[in-house]
Amino acid sequence: MSTSTSVLECSMNKQTVQCLVQAVQKLSLSRDIETVMFIVRTTARKISGADGATFVLRENDKCYYADEDAIGPLWKGQRFPIYSCISGWAMLHKQSVVIEDVYNDSRIPINAYRPTFVKSLAMVPIRSIDDPIGAIGAYWANQYVPTEEQVILLQSLADITAVTLENIKVYNELEERVKERTRELISCLEREKEMSAMRRHFFSMASHEFKTPLTNILTSTSLLESYNNEGKNAEKRAKHINRITTCSQHLVDMVNDFLAAEKIEQGKTDIVFEWFNVKRFMKAIIDQMESCLKKGQSLVYTHNGDSHIFQDKSILRIVLLNILSNASKYSDENKPIEISTAVHAGEMTIKVKDHGIGIPKEDQPNIFNNFFRAGNTAGIQGTGLGLHIVKSCMELLNGKVCFKSRPKHGTTFTITCSNPRLKNVVMINNASPQYVNYI
Image (cartoon, rainbow, N blue to C red; front, top):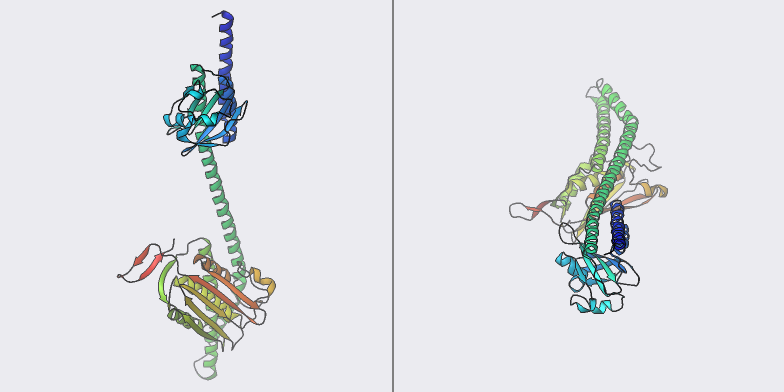
């Protein structure tokens, strides 16, 4: 070998190594597979002196020819069974392969190569910790046997590619985790912002709403001390006692509304399903409500269909007490409130119809919003939380609440809910399912 030839080969080797080093530097900065494939396919051609190069990815039992850089079309975008192509052979055997004559090797699917320029090839696996995840192919238009050094350089490129792909996977997982945590943080901050606004609104409202009932309670308590239990004074005592009871109940209702709303917003509401008799359940609700009705108001109840339902009684009680309380509050004295329940095929429908002031059309889209009160409720005590609580409770039960209303003609609320799918059912005394934790 002449000195000039030796110098030329040395120079070429130096350029090849330099090319690989540059590829490594670029790959270390890559954050997506498209960039990786571009760097790898172009570098593979340069360091092997090939007429074409492919970047192959393993997809279960398929070899996906994801990208290529060649003097003519190869197989970009195509998929082949892993057991019938040379890239699959390299991956399955976890080793490089050199084929001088593609038409004289049993591992080659000849029909796939006939439309191409390929006469010789070298294929190296992209090795990961476990099984190879892909392969890099180099192709020549004339029969050619790559040197051992060229194959080593190709395999080195493939190994660096494997590390890069693993790094990208880790990077993407970390980035997604950061995004997820950021979303959670934003959600928590928004929730906290909403809760802070709710608290500010509540305390602002409470300072006004609490003043009147507290004043009435103090005044009536003071006057009671000066009355005896006889004659007209007895009637006056009864009047003031009733006022104290009504005002105290209003204060309790306000606090309960706020606590219930906060509990739901924080996702701390326990849900316990059980079988119960609908008519007995409704009778208990009606008995509880009758003492809170206005003078002359009455609750008229009817039932149709099955007698039992599998639901959460506590949450349904909250829903009904809020709806019935509104029906009484926004209706005049001596007006009936009609309640009907129906249970068919595991679905319960409850309707509450009043003959009150109704809801103005322009206010109806906002009626379930926090602290929202319709424009025609001025002078009527309330927190604006009741219907928001109703809607939130029905969402917990995967149920629905809707209404129809006309100003001065009353409102009808309809709630529907179905038996939940039974999970983790607890049997008591080998009887029918008694309750189930909601999942």
